[in-house]
Amino acid sequence: MIIVKLGGSLSQSDTLVKCLNRVEQNYPDSAVVIVPGGGAFADQVRLAQHHWQFDDKTAHRMAILAMQQMALLFNGIKSNFTIANSLLDIQKQLHKQKIVIWSPDIVELDKAAIQASWDITSDSLAAWLAKALSARELVLVKSAIIDASLNLQQLANQNLVDKGFCDLVMQATFKIQVINQQNF
Image (cartoon, rainbow, N blue to C red; front, side, top):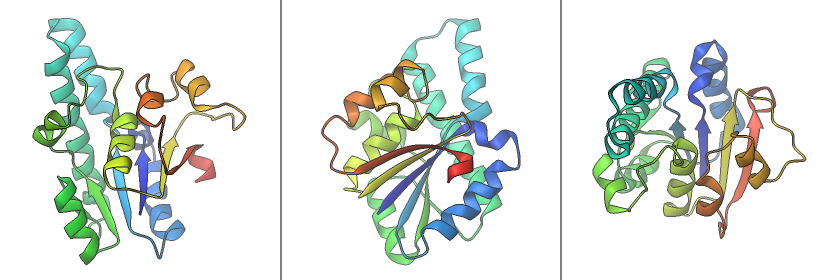
């Protein structure tokens, strides 16, 4: 199984459609779970938190809802993909279909003790999912230019992956790629 996280900023152009099409083209014989970034929806959460000064737990839950909105957007573009909310639902859907879009379940993430912080974004949630599902590969597709010579910590230092990502993948048994959309 392969986890492909598509950054929310990809939705700001036609790139999103191209990336969704590439998922089908690049992994025709693999079970794939797409993890959506929060995109503009998550940006609105950041703005609202800054304005209203609510706590990180509330912001975290709202950011999960942003990912859920992006999952609906992805499914609206690719209706032949299916949405799954929980680990169990993903496993069931993968038996029926090869490409699943994850719409994260807030309760499941709370039970998994996922930290409610902006240090944990959809990058880290994709890593958590890859670990929970024993994926063989995690691919983070970004709109930013990625220097292939940088290691994960250097990418985190440049805010190209979130601050919690390195801790979550420290003992990962799956392959990790962080790539620009043009290389996907």
